[in-house]
Length: 82
Image (cartoon, rainbow, N blue to C red):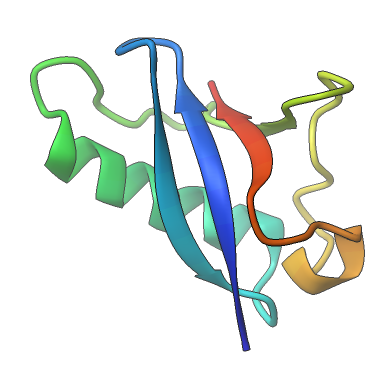
């Protein structure tokens, strides 16, 4: 099962809708999302070892060792990739 996330990328000032499996760890989802966005916006974004996903409402960093599906996210949930 997958979830549709709205990921804001500060480097571009845009949000991107990305389908992510619910049964992967946040660190895996972060790498997947970073790879997708690096391909979409190579002039503005290149992933580093320190990238992380943050909740778009609270600003809290998502736990890298948690499953995406266990975080209570819903389709359209806003996240920030930094």
